[in-house]
Image (cartoon, rainbow, N blue to C red; front, side, top):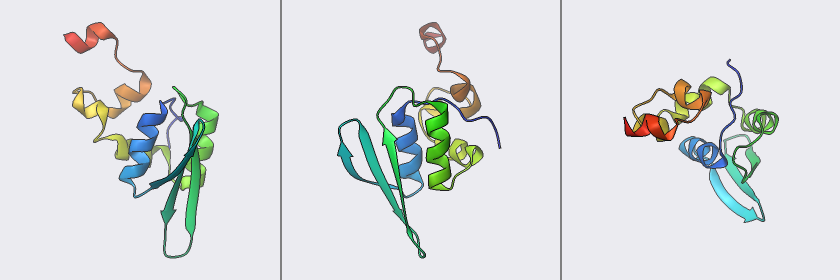
Length: 102
């Protein structure tokens, strides 16, 4: 398991939704998601921060029962691949404007 990245909430939402999480509510600056499993219903709350603190994100991953590697696999179809970058490069830091145009 790798280091927990610092990501914007939009990337976290996309990854969780790709893992069958459903947005059930938003109140203020927090979005509630649920995932139904045969044994139970899992719930997490994601703050709408850019970026979400790494410690907060670590707790979200624990509640969602996901590892950092699982999250990176879910993100592989998101923005990082659209930019022609590996997920690890995107997590290590978003590209600068000059990197996007070249």
